[in-house]
Length: 368
Image (cartoon, rainbow, N blue to C red; front, side, top):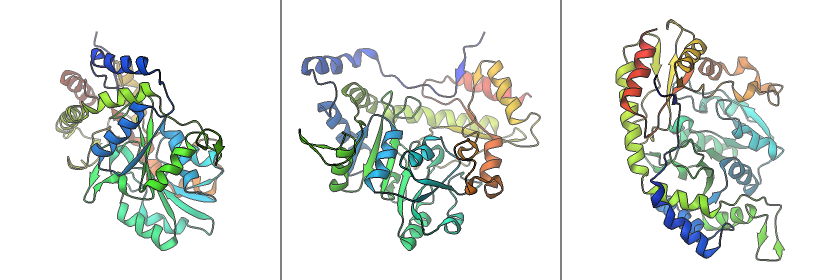
């Protein structure tokens, strides 16, 4: 019987390499509250990612909530329905109304051509998502934001290490938010970060993630407990030593899938973003109408055979009860996002995935 294959599994460095970090934590007795590993990881990530300032968080959802607070966003924010639900939840947590706009059918990122018609006097920001790590049309989005005096916060949960012609994609917009969840290319078990353009912004975000504390007795803002622990930061420092190797393995798996699926009728792969910008965080396919099975039937048959893909992102955020009553959630306004949500299937991809498993998955899909 074949071993079950899941859509993603965290890369875990050798356990014996983690022991020295644990010993230092034990000896220092500093477990959290922005200890030495926390500061080391912030600097190491800045150096690796090519960004100036970075604030670590316990997870990306709290990082998104805090990023919106740091920029004092209110009213309405234009965003995508094609993402993980935390994108829109971060708006609701701040009392902000999400306004959903359709996606580009080729990239599945927020379509800049649809943004302007959604802007109202209450619009204060745009929150796009670099879906599957493929960069948004950042220049077009920034031009619109500048024309209407809007802030831009990128949900960059998938975009660790991704670059474009300008350098790190994380440097676009007013703020970008990363996820270090266990399913991500780079993980700290749980974690996240806000990329800050300047030291002043980072200081404000650091205050907000620590209850609003400034010093021991002063509280200057209604902050939250969003600090990353020393254990998570230590794991991040160790993970960072292996990140290039991990992405290289993902690249090989991505290429193998593309080669083996290119002749399968009814199965389309999203366009390759190219090795200069991709981090190979996911491998999505689109199950078209001329494939012998529906997407959901293929999904179930794969699961029944021990292969566990995911329908990222299905249902759309706009279909969930807390959002579907919004005028912008009307499916007629979101044809591309709805079509993608009915077709998409993310196949397993992670550094330890064996090529024989890739062969088995592709053979299964091709033989239906």
